[in-house]
Image 1: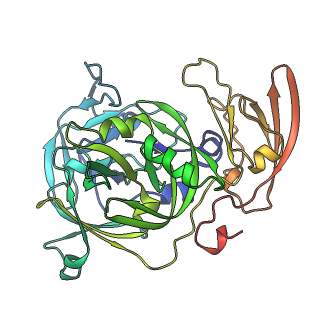
Image 2: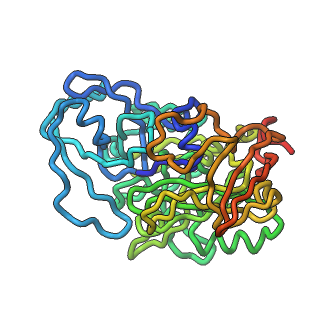
Length: 390
């Protein structure tokens, strides 16, 4: 279960349509007769997760977790028994409850995880943010690339054989907007082979790790075993991906997010453990990325609320004089030092994802020195679509 965000972007615009649209929504769901909005997240290992604030709103009693989770895992509370209606399924059950940070204003009420649908035949349409069930695998899909669905994982994953004959896992996480997250080893190999690729910075939140900062680049073509994808964003996977995607039999290879699934037709036959994948030949859809090339996030091991800079070399932020470790004080004149408790936040505008040539003003602190600078956004990733061409 992951929420993707940039701390400052989240603070400014997490409730905007752009953020809300980067989900695959379950059409209809009710709990005790009350409608709830669930997104389908194949990276979640339990059938249904409600956010604690939603459980409270629904009047459900919650028992907190009584165990310490393993590394890379997350401890869930549980609700009292309730009626869950997913449109075609109506059961009486208890639900898992996750405690999300108050500053994450998520557009969903909870998550429908992979175990809830793992026995179905599903068409994942990431381009239209939809999911559809089939009674049988369509005939046209029989000729597509076939991969085995991992049955020993509680999240969606495929097994491939790498160039050295080793078995490897590719996870599928519809809860993230990114493209491909590569294992640390594969990411370093990719970077050594693409030394001149421009990079930007992305930040996101995981319950087990907190804020995660990652470089993001663009791959014109990349092979994951027999699966070859074109025109996708790539970044290094975090520790949670590696832990969850590794086993005694198979090493972790990569995680596919929505931007990667956009490049594929995907039919998952969970009942028989087969995935049918077909590369799309159409141009890549526009990919919203951080055009500043920097992010500001609190340190996970710190008790203060400083938003600390993480800057990609050669980015607009770097050219504007912003460096790793600078502390953000203001953006476009608005004080962000009290971002957790601010009752008068700035307009909901995704500041770093504005069009190229947009100017963004910063006030920062470096040591004891306070300074101001202006960065001019530009298209860093050469993604498909007119909005991202340099």
